[in-house]
Length: 185
Image (cartoon, rainbow, N blue to C red; front, side, top):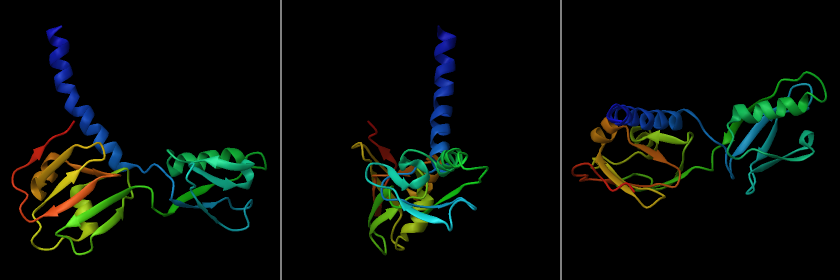
């Protein structure tokens, strides 16, 4: 039992780090995104399709609507390729033309406060910092999570701890971040 507990405590941080890494490497589609879909030889030209509030796109070869929310572009391309197989051997490509389903509020010591849209399910603080363009006084961030928890850290500490920004977070750039703190729930 003791060996199991020790092994569990060793592997737990690795699984959390793996989750954070996975979040930063993929983008799951959601309402508001716009997709460009191309099936050469079947469609006359690439088609731009907005993801509706119900998570679907209008697609004639799907017989109406196709559920795409929660999927990656690779998964949607595979669905479309499978649907196109009814008409022959076609290749399908899908990419996000406009990202709009992963909003994050940027406030505080930042040149252009407002809503920024993530292009991954999560991004490291340094990536969000580059997109938000904080002013020179900014030394760190306070992150209010969608679940109610919060994290505050200086930029170097955020990077060392591999803190990520997720959809629904509110990020305040601060001139005095103080020491790293977290009240994760």
